[in-house]
Image 1 (tube, chains in turn green, red, brown, purple):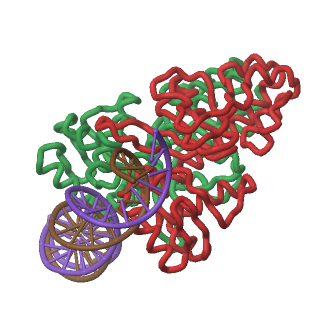
Image 2 (tube, chains in turn purple, orange, yellow, brown):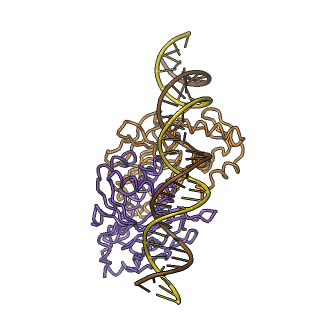
Image 3 (cartoon, helix red, strand yellow):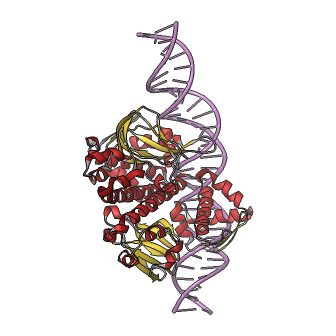
Length: 230
Length: 230
DNA sequence: CGATTGATTGAGCTTTGTCAAAAGCGGTGG
DNA sequence: CCACCGCTTTTGACAAAGCTCAATCAATCG
């Protein structure tokens, strides 16, 4: 009865902390399909659950006053969305699917109902959140670097690493997001993204074909990204 | 026996969750003086504690290959440093004091020893960490915006707000960090920081005198920072 | 009171954003 | 199957922002 598809997910730690399987259903709503473009939650809504991505790519974003969507993060399979809203008790940003995908809902509000297993689940959750903080900080590190080249190289490598962690192919990448969304995320102009990818291709670092990316010279890319990576 | 100086701190939530005061000493090492420049921990060391800033300003940073220090964050009184290392079990960056200050050490590794109170302490900790994630994300949002003006305005307002939350004066600010450190943090050149502050002064937004900053036109500043604030 | 370090200022040059237009791509309906 | 439409991506030209280098000024510390 346990969510077997959570095996590869970061939140497996949390789930595994719960021995009584019948309790699992109280904190976990299993795999749900999410069509392309559908929202998970919106900024300002009261926090009711965090989401574990099972498949597909999601993004979190904020609506600026001028109506522009600013991309805050991309979320890949195995990652968690919205857990930070647990503090303010409401979501501070919105999230939606970039392509058809599926998610599990996690009711961390009701964690206390788990009794015995509660403590273990919390322990795990704390660790997961520690990882989230590290990730967010790494992100802000990346964003603080000014050179567009560095940002894009680091962005691509970061995506590849995250996919790789979940056993996806490490030299081939399918971007689920538009150039516009990448640009917004990295804080640069769409045209710069386009030109930069072209340049990377022309010097033999990548093979770019629309949303398909192939890594031809990983060390070369890492060299460009080095100032903002670990 | 409780750390009375934690009253104003974010971690008061954690401490207050523990009713048995005698247990507090097991997870908390009370106020310690830290001289200017002294390090709290270094990247790569095993995680043994998080630090709550009681007074003074701290910064976390990473050493790049070329020997340059990249500033990751500034930590003001009442804030927590290093809690994200709980996941990887080692610190991913270093931290040190920018001026004489004091800190409490928090041994979250031994949280389990608290027994009964454990659950409450964890609940609180989870919320604190949620806040950390939000803060880090807000930071990366700020950094992703390209305009130097926006970054600096947002940076100053953010500092002021954080001080303000702890009952410091809201129109006057004493920067504990150097221009170089601000530049590194925001990902811009030192010269740009300097010129930008001068410009803000010349149009009547600020009064700048070395490390002393006075806000003359807060709405004006907020207007400049608006694209990256909430 | 030098000397060292940090902050400011200036000049030139590179990068990147902006605007505008062309090209590609995908879907739709004839 | 093709022509058309809307949208995304690419490309080009230009202007503006910010970086670099270099010099000056200020401040801090023996």
